[in-house]
Every structure is written in C-alpha cells, then in structure tokens.
Image (cartoon, rainbow, N blue to C red; front, side, top):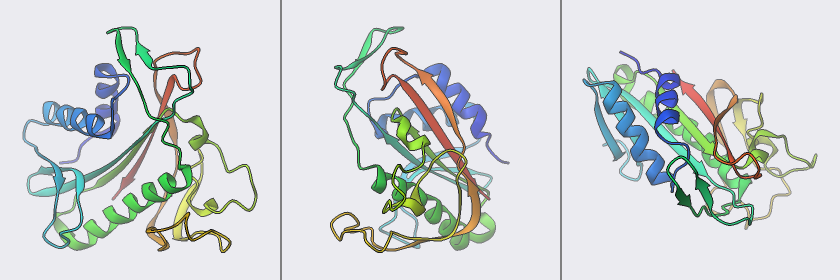
Length: 216
C-alpha cells in the first residue's frame, strides 16, 4: 500500500498554514499521516541499522514496507516583524535563514539519501518523498548569475535533476565546507512547485510554497 502525498499535503493545508520550525512541520505531517493511514507505523528521526549516522525525518511502515520522508522548512523574514496568522491570531517570528545554495544542495542530498535507502532495504522499500516548504520565493527562480556556484543544485520551477551534480570549480572552500561531495542521482526528477498557503498577501514573506519529489 502506498500513501498519497498530494492528499497528505491537502489535509496539512487545511490544518496549518504556517509552522514554527522544521520540527513543528515534521510533527504535524507525521500526525496527519497517522490520522489518514490507521494501519501505518510512523517513526520520527529513525536511525537505520545500515547507517547509524543517518536520521530519517519521518519513516512510515505499512505492511513491512518502508516509506521514508525527508523534510526541509526554510524561512525568510522580510524585516516587517512577525507574521500573524489572522485565523487563529497566532504570531510566528520566523528566522531569515538564507543560505539558499546550501539548502538546495541539502534537498538534493535528501533525494540521494532516499535512493540509498531504496538500495539498502531492497524489496522492503515502497516509495520515498523529499518535501521542501518555504516562504522564500527565490527558490522557485533560476540563479541570477550565469557563473553561479550552485547552478547544478538550483531548484527552480521546472528544472530537471539527474546524474552527477557538483559545485562549480570556482566555489570557495568556505561555501561548501562539509558538503563538498558531488551528488549523484540514479533517477530523473522534475522540480515542480505549488502554493501551500497565503498567510499575508501584502507581505513578500507571506506566501508559502512547497516542492515534493517522489522516489520510486
């Protein structure tokens, strides 16, 4: 049995428009999955036996089949103060996280990680998902500079990601410290963004967008 990530996102949209943090996003998605799939076992930060340094954000077990889900929640703060979700009058003081180049790399690294999980667990693997949620609209757009150091990793809407992806030769050592390794994808993936919520249409940081990549 598979899960329907489109339906999960839709239910999550009805429940929450904005999240405090990545951990908050992780908890709410896991909760929705458990509500929708009563026969599923859901684990957070699961450490597999084949790699004790790996932490899978959400691991869903259905009929002994693995469905790993990796999440990214990267926020922008326009400098206009905290965002208020008027429906509940809750206020969210989001960080201006930046580091777009690194976050793009790490999302694609999530895809590569799920591909590795598939290889390790073999027939017990059902499918996997990488999910990125952000209110920083620049992720949807291509790099502004032709010699951009993270061009291979850019997640702009419509981009196709496959094969070996690596930093440009002129990338500074400080930029890629700890994440120097190229990413090699076995599958072919199209980046397709959608609107998640509109918390405040008058602010540049008031709209959230999501990206889902399915690994099969």
